[in-house]
Length: 237
Image 1: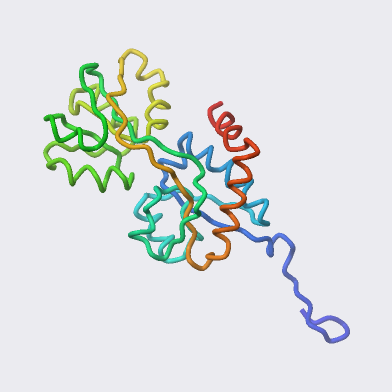
Image 2: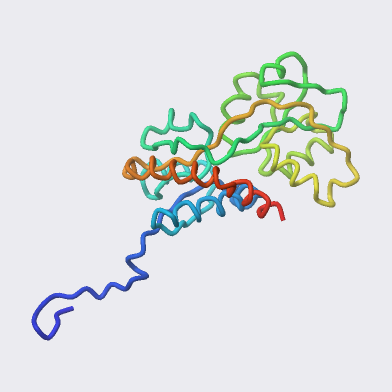
């Protein structure tokens, strides 16, 4: 607006000029234990850098598209090599935590150790839609007839309980979260093996290339302060 002395003055409020960083992720992750943990971690991390975090959940493919195009500012939770296929994104070098891809079944005789161990048997394997790691690895190891996609960890475990698959592979914490629910209390599941342990990172769009190393420093400091583990305990409550 124009003031009485003829000078232009902004009418934008402080709230409107507040810096917001928007990160996306899969709906499944956002609604899980990991989503709660990530929210706690990155709310504090970006606060230290002068930003307010906005964390949106989408179908995994849509999340990738939005971050690739710079419509959102990045992705909150992806495996370390994610940028290999998404060159518009820059990895925040400090991981927020490590994740385990684990296999669970109801037959205690099933023993697996790493992705390669899936080749030496005839098990039918379930995995969750939208999890990039399992979506990329499993079809290279097994024929389509031995694979079954689920829409959630819960559905994947139900497929095992119903005998449609022998093993379900997903991020371990998502599986154990579901197994603690009453629906599965009368079914005994066993961890058949760990497929992979991998660090997980946030990725920022290249327009934020100067912010990524600053965020990495903050995450490292938070880890040294014990905050990452403290937030994990809060998320588990």
